[in-house]
Length: 205
Image 1 (cartoon, rainbow, N blue to C red):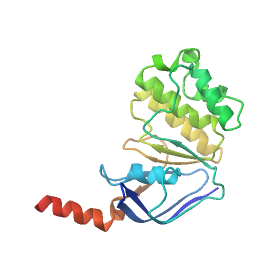
Image 2 (cartoon, rainbow, N blue to C red; image 1 turned 120 degrees about the horizontal axis):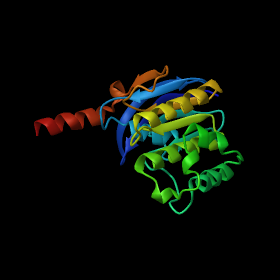
Image 3 (spheres, rainbow, N blue to C red; image 1 turned 90 degrees about the vertical axis):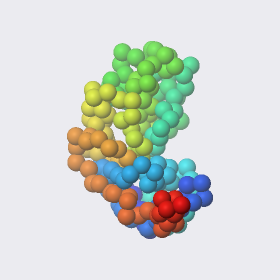
Image 4 (cartoon, rainbow, N blue to C red; image 1 turned 45 degrees about the horizontal axis):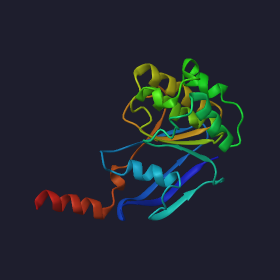
């Protein structure tokens, strides 16, 4: 299942930030979006995930339900345990098994603990583990390693590699080496002309 982005433009607060973005992500492929802070990485990822409409251009997906998204919020319920959180999301997506997600993200010893009592890094791992219980082939992630220590980054990297090996796709923004092959898409050349002009004006005002 190939994700295609065709002449895509995205806006933040009604102001275009990116335009003319083109790339494709095939099964088994990881695409990393790079660029300076504020370039529009989060806005683009939210648009891919269907959380906001494109400003222009197209996002082509064979299946509208193909994407699982993990943003800055962990998307967990504090009053539920780790296992209860994962079972909830598994049921939402029509899945049954959470054992693989628990193992891949090192959550076994935390399974019965309430999510509200977890550390920031543990909450992040639980939030990312939701991806593995969706059954969806395309993972879209915004700075997924925030709050993770090196061991947890390694766990996450292994989980993504397993997802790619099974024919999945990953598109994410990150500034660190994940330890596996990725195709880099630098968004800097796609900055909207209005954004570049505004930055120029602000410098000389």
